[in-house]
Image 1 (cartoon, one colour):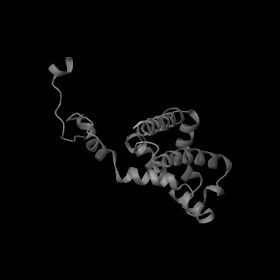
Image 2 (image 1 turned 60 degrees about the horizontal axis):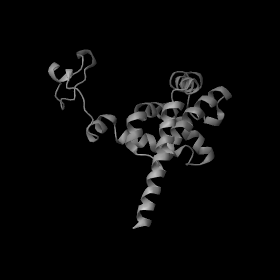
Image 3 (image 1 turned 120 degrees about the vertical axis):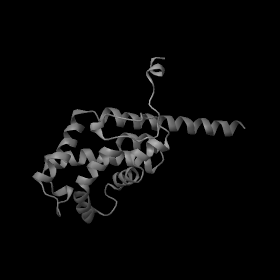
Image 4 (image 1 turned 90 degrees about the vertical axis):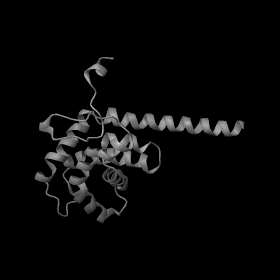
Length: 174
């Protein structure tokens, strides 16, 4: 019995350490000025300055390549954590789903051109993350994880899931 409990305790400690690493990546790195500049460049300037057909990541000028690699390696690292079951997928799906899909949509042609040179494993964990995010959209995750939502939102947003009751003022005060 002692061995069983020791193994469980070891696994629990490993999971806690891996979760801390994931949280560190999700909070510190993603909110850094360098990451935000890289994300802005990739999403808003890359395709204008360097149109994608047959342009690999390696073909990009140094500054553009720096931004692409910075953003790609961030999402690739998160994808590695998912692939090796180092973190609960729910933590990442809710946090990076939309942003990772946006980045992949822009970077895919550059990554595929790079894969033609290097091989099919280039940034494959990034693709794994985006695949998971695509097939487990946040709207589905909200239901699956039983997250609570309001029944209605301002009409101009056009959002309503219709599954949760709106709290009355009486219940809000408590």
